[in-house]
Image (cartoon, rainbow, N blue to C red):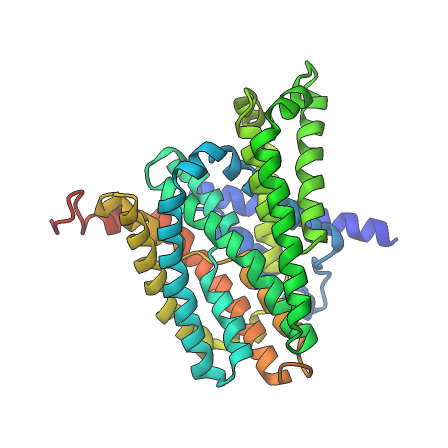
Length: 401
């Protein structure tokens, strides 16, 4: 009976995703906010509260969401090979540092103002700093921006953020669980760097290996081999404390040096889109809108303060790539989006309730982060989709029209 119920829930999920996706297409809008809202409407906190069967945050939905992140970042890697990464390292560094200093600094200030304590301030800084690689990548692909000049600072900054968050998560998890265990944090960071170094070696020296791996006339074996390598390495990364998104990005870069890039994009794009939709639906499924309402004041403060700071840092990041003001504005609008990593940090905060964090503080951070992601994911995708309206106020040479 449990299997039948679980299969029915998954069927309801995919039917809802298909329905709201059709609606978004008819309205010519990004489907991402629709997927999230569908998840909220069908979750245990909303539909379940009426006594009707709800879609739960089951293991399948959670793993499907992880796969969505993995395939979205894999495709980002396909567009960003190692030569391009190394050639752009100075500009990536400048844009990334601007993004880090502005947004992490603002987050720390807000955290101290709201909670008056370093640990919750550090957690809140992470929530507001990290943009959503998964959501932004999906929007870049949907809008056709992936081949535009603004994709370079966007992808470069996202890479910088993902590498920073690999270290950040190791630190905060150790602090939250161990009450300031510096050795645990140092060990976790060391493991993360070793694994990332392994991935870099794989990208730099593994082209011949990947060419042979994908050299098969069978479409079935081609897909299975590509998916097997990508998911295996992403899972291994997660097991040692490194973001699966970072690993998937490096695997994509490894495949980008082969002659099979177009074949990979053709064969895996449908798989990417299906699991990406599950990821966005999962955000809604784990969101309790009633808890979010309780933190509405904090959420409003975070949105009002940090949306402009991300816009500013993204714009400045675009300028470090010598883009004109119109394209730099696009970078800023896209970077407003927050998502998966903010939710991970929220879960870390909640796990510390009654321990290294006061229970009320932990619940406030969790509720605020969930609501913040909900608002900023919808706001960011909307801003990207309507960027033309904002671009009317800035011409290519930077003058106001």
